[in-house]
Image (cartoon, rainbow, N blue to C red; front, side, top):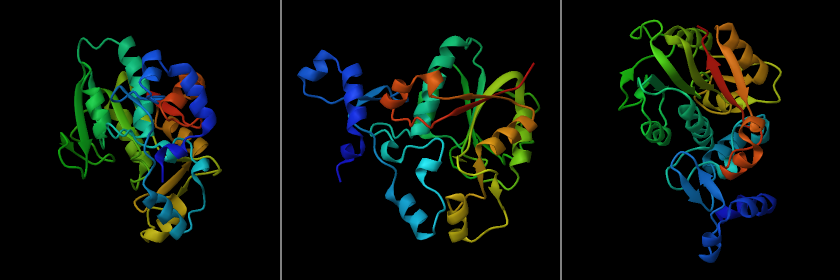
Length: 273
């Protein structure tokens, strides 16, 4: 299957008109896309592994990718650095944010369950970068998101917690811990898979059957599936101020160029002084 066939023709035409330089046209290249994580101009993004779709069909997943807020299965990963669509979304935001804030004192940024492509991007900036996870190798801190007792109160300036809360048995406890370790005035990127059809959070940590987890939660290591309001309410209940940034903030054409769907939303949390 030709990867480029995944890209709608209307999007190709719009991007070509906006972003093709004369030199690229002369060279016969088709570099209409851009990865902000590795700063590469691209002709395409790689699709999500077919394994996910096969398992969702096998176990009777109740939804489609169109029901999910931030995922682009057709243009999922960068062929150069491997950055997923959400990595690219975070990189877009961080690139802008790091230009606006004072990094002279190297603020402490903790990334939980680190993404390697995003890690490389962050390390290019003047931040004190640490990684943490309970199971991953080669992280700075081995810890449980629900019990980060090794971190004192008001410890970090910034955190990134992406697609972890759907895995833990008590996400409310994990959210309280994230709030506790963040300094007043600090901020973070906090993301989970969000189903746009659900009216409430579907969760049951006691479910251990792999097929049932695929059917209800969309993956065999997930214990809940968030709806939008339920996720936002839980984050606010933990004490955070929550900011949702969509295509109107980033500009629709930037989403198209970076292979990010128009349904994508970036959730930023802040801890008041």
